[in-house]
Image (cartoon, rainbow, N blue to C red; front, side):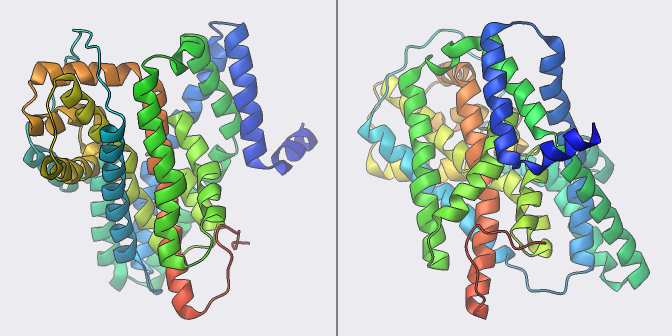
Length: 411
């Protein structure tokens, strides 16, 4: 068994994941209700979600307590903000070029939407000052980051022995993460089986036109605008790095549909790329909370579809305001239960669209959520690693360091 496992792990993780993906899809079409197969996906996502808060907490403390190298947090945050704004702009332009009118179902989603941007920001601020134990228990990454940062800075004056304890703990948790990630092919197998056996191939056809706009915008951002942002910063071919991030981060995020669950995957990718641990231990969990280009696309496209359905003509100034509102709302999406979909009524209020109509649009969002949310998470999470690497490469350019974007550097 040990030799078989060794041969299995010697195969590229991406190839193993693709095998799990294909087998899961085939089995999902042929056989229904295999509970033990569905359990594989549930266990994998649960394991990632369980280890991620602990990983982030101790990595941030260790990184800040032992920080000596220059970090690039300012550059990374700027890249996060720019990409989210660009995403909202792409979504609004696409909605003007290809206006969509929805057939409302009359089944409004019964959920509470934020009443204004102030409520979204208030939720984010309250998450920052949450009880640290509660933050860890509920995977409140904004709170975990805040407490990790405070404790890390406070430990800067601690003895080297104390600092080394936190370093050893973060290394141990990182090793656990690598063990969990090695189980990804089995987890993806279970997740794909569950999706296909439950919904069949129909999940790809419902509300096809709307999905086409949403997914098309996300593809434009992932393959055109994000690479352009990377190129303008590093002045090298961005696609090896872009494709590496999409393969190793995007695929996993697509099936887990959780930026939080994908934090360990992004951490491991950054480690293999040889990036500064002091930077990525903070930027990756921060990106999982504020870097939300996919959410900005969803909010903008769905709000524009609602306006077209209601027969409202959107002028240029209002469209610009929608871009900013969608970007800011997307950054606060992690603090709102239901994520980007429940922020759609907030954007719709800009056009004076009634709440009941807006919530029907939200209901449609939940119907197409199998594909929409998967693509959104893949874009959001893969770009966390992408822009963390971009900021690092930009610094390497200044230092005259020779490197190839997307190439492994870590031993």
